Image (cartoon, rainbow, N blue to C red; front, side, top):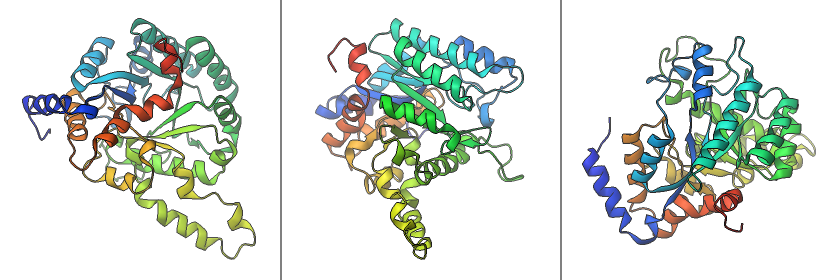
Length: 350
């Protein structure tokens, strides 16, 4: 339930539009699309409530998305396929689902130049197929980055079997949006029947990113431009605790301590999107961990519905705890630097 009426939200958005630099047209790095091919694939796989999402498979169209963007002052949205991704079980071919979604993402960008970009979907854990699709999606279709689920059938992103994929993403210096899904193993009887997006998503994001750091993936492949969703989940709150526990646990192991990556240092090289409810609690925690230049805006539309999305956007634009420079950086400037392909799409030199 929203705290504000639609009229009150629009009044706050209108007020922010008169507030100088905070009124800059935003770049949304975390929103989703459900093109016809993907909606059919979900239907054919019998998926009606992805990860227990209470509203079922949400409505989406380019026109509805553009209308929401206009209301929220968003110039460009970078869209991705959300959970459950492209591995849908049964007879569904993940390679076909990914390729068709990417084709339709490219068409969305062509139909609305300057308004959309897209992250490519990959059919992991099929590494060879993923590498081929990176080449096709980036070089032929013009994808701005890739989106990866925290795991696929229990294979988490830090697994050695995915190392060649991260090597290619690093070589290309691509933005990589991590998106949570239900964890590989659920505890029976705990919050049964509730949407996984309410709480499990944040634990799985924390698990996946921690694994990426301590598996050495981010150290080996420094060109990966990782975008951690939903204000970093539990990572800002736990970062120092994890770092200190690892340091203490390895004091007695000669040489091992020096070879372990710094957990906090690794996180500070990542980006954090602001999808979801980040004020008043999460955003201050992030600001205590990373530099202002590492925070980017996300609406999570349409999984965050139009009303709530407008309220959260208004919260950010009118937050008295943020300076005008911070608002401008979070809403636009940091994302503009993250996506050089946006300039190419708009016909502006990168």
